[in-house]
Amino acid sequence: MPAGHIHDRITLGSLPIVGGASLALTQSASQTLGLCTAFLFSGLMFGPDLDIYSRQFCRWGPARVMWIPYQRLLKHRSWCSHGPFVGTALRLLYVLSWLALGGGLVWMVLDALGSAWSWQQLGAIAHTSWQHYRPEYLAVLIGLELGAMSHSGSDWIGSTLKRRRRSRSKLHSLRHRPAKSRRSP
Image (tube, rainbow, N blue to C red; front, side, top):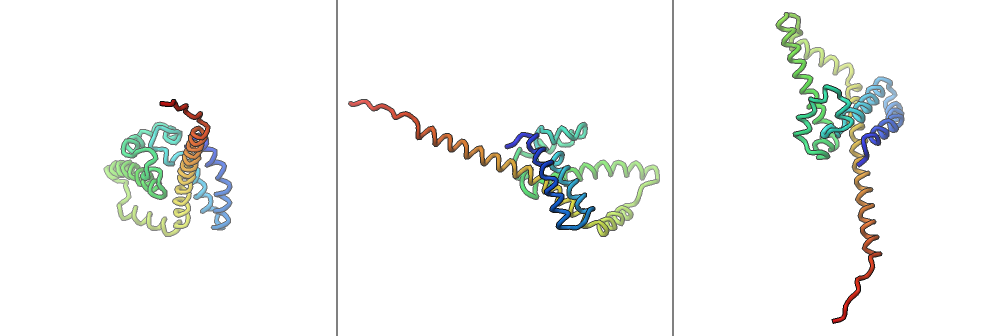
């Protein structure tokens, strides 16, 4: 499993490829910008290693305290944190729940002051935004997943190579071990 700085290099080194492929496929600067931004965010701050004390965790600064319950709930490198699609979806739902909690508190304060939007207005805004920017939202979701997959993929490749090296080393040591002398009865 690569160290945090190696994951960062993989993310940054992959960005031109991801951006070029996105622009070639979508022909859209806004979708490519959304995908690349989400890819960087996921690779550097929102990836699978939020389930441990890691570079990704530390980059959240004081807000990293919100990830402590997540770390206690999930085992490191479990399918829930490192699994394709599942890990990203769980992290996204986790962050959205914190944002909803904070937004709900702000809404309650604004409502008490008489200046909050109604739920109908918020729903209409969300619906209109989804209708107008659906491709961009989907590009962001794809970027989040690609950033996480680059991390999990490099973990998997690193672990596989390490296992192969160990088994070859073990096989080599078994072949070249001196023969035990046998005593005659």
